[in-house]
Length: 560
Image 1 (cartoon, one colour):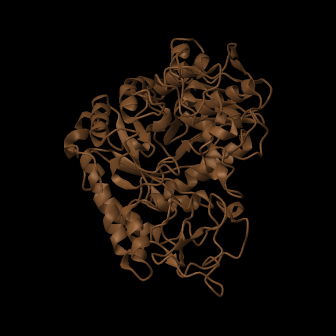
Image 2: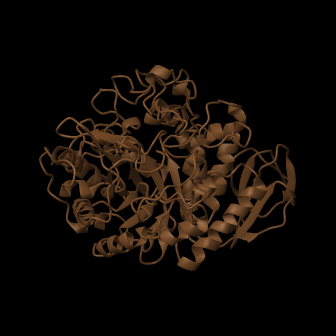
Image 3: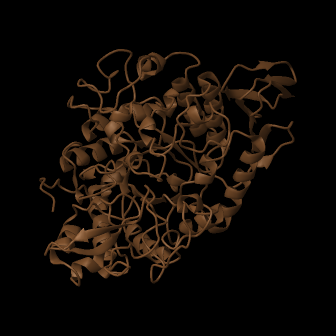
């Protein structure tokens, strides 16, 4: 299907230029790049792979271990690339396979690993298989690779079941058959342009095992699996028997999500990954009812990591934080997998804005809130996250303290959920606005031709240029925190913390000689001086045996 010249696959030894540190993924800090909003090399207003490649030294100097790239595959872009038309091609807006090859090689030379997105739950409606299925009509073998069903009602005018799309409306769309008559329906748990694969068909598994090998041979270090809890549907596609099904997501096992059969697929994939050198990894985007069910995805013969969405959705509250930290560590310990911690990504309001608002508004909001409060809490939350045992994820721009852009005009929005009623809130564009690199310029250094989403006035003062070398800036806080984390033996990998007695509203724990204290209250608290201060997210006052920690501030100490 690819129309691009094939890049010569990098040999599997290509990762040899990356440090061969054993089990690197157990304590890795992984930086998410949303390619269309990171850096634009050709001035078309859209970020691209060459733009990412030119900024790799920045990521190395920031101190991260790996870079996760959101989809850059050939796509009609109905859902920002999560509707894939060719899994072995780069979309022309992002470059070519040769650009991908150069990016992977340069990253390895800088000591960075590359993780790419994999979208196995659904394809684009422009994928060759689906186009063939439409053309060949009912009863064709091509239709068996997706979920085509006859409709209910006298003339098949009703959807086959009551499932609802995550983006709103029915999860089924009726097709017009080649003879022009209304025909079967096909399942799409997301946009209509994203038909779900039928993973019971052996050709689907064969295709994705081939796709895995294609990118592993190119030298990638792993895959982030989109909708990893999807793919397998309950036998017979039974009705759910409920409306407003989105409210049930994350609370119940659904007939289309988190089905036990998905784990057999991952055991097959793991055997493929283990054939390759360099400790390649799988990361699951698995929205499950509990962190205990999330742990099923990271058993020793399945995936390596799973995003911790329970932590992402936790309020800035000491009691809630301690509870989710304990539950996460307790759930991961029996399966021997590292915990992961994340505060923001391309699907949720940036945490500098979430924490600027009252608790209980969810992870997609349109309120700017108290900017100063939000940034103070975001900085404190970052130091808390980076002190916890396991691996951490950083979303591009959070190291600059970027807020969500909550006032985008409706006419510039591109989130498909925004245009469908009763689905997700559809405000994901706010966290996808291109990041600023310089104080001035048509797009603050993003590129020479503006940006695909408008950047707010004042973006330049939050830029990399403005914050570099500036004492106390959020960027320098991240750089120092990652350097301390890497050089401190008691940080990084592990599966437990020792909780310390602390006033109400304060999280305090020890890891060897290291102590982390996070004050989540709105007032200063006096605490024992636990040793030498390594780092603090705000100004603290110390005496010989006591430290005054301001509101919404995290401090790192060491007794060493």
